Length: 165
Image 1 (spheres, helix red, strand yellow):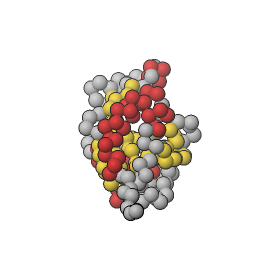
Image 2 (image 1 turned 45 degrees about the horizontal axis):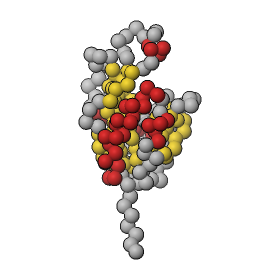
Image 3 (image 1 turned 90 degrees about the horizontal axis):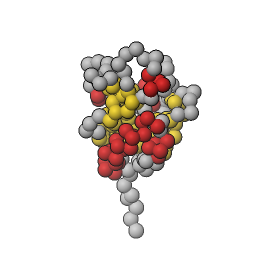
Image 4 (image 1 turned 180 degrees about the vertical axis):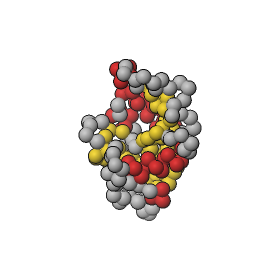
């Protein structure tokens, strides 16, 4: 499914732990890292796609996270021309809504091979802004803008310091 400009709708998932770090997944058999993401199928809501992709790519279920925030608009990125030269469709890239999720149990064991075609073969907790400088270049500006929009809501994911002097 594509929009009239050739962008495929997609959900991008930012999972934060109680220290404010985010899940960073290594694409299977590649030296490329990204947030979990996936296409929104025809007649599928953003929320249904979000939780379907979350389970497929990380093994997390809906009751193991809290949806904290979703970007208001779509963030687009275009694929480089060399990737489109054999493309016979009007597809030019992806438009994404980013969802910030709070992981309810920092001890959760991610299951990366739940799907028949796993997206990731490794993962790490990284600082919130780290992905902006590390993601594949065509996605970089979309990541920067989306994380900037979501940043004020990160405080809802961070464990409160309850120690008293």
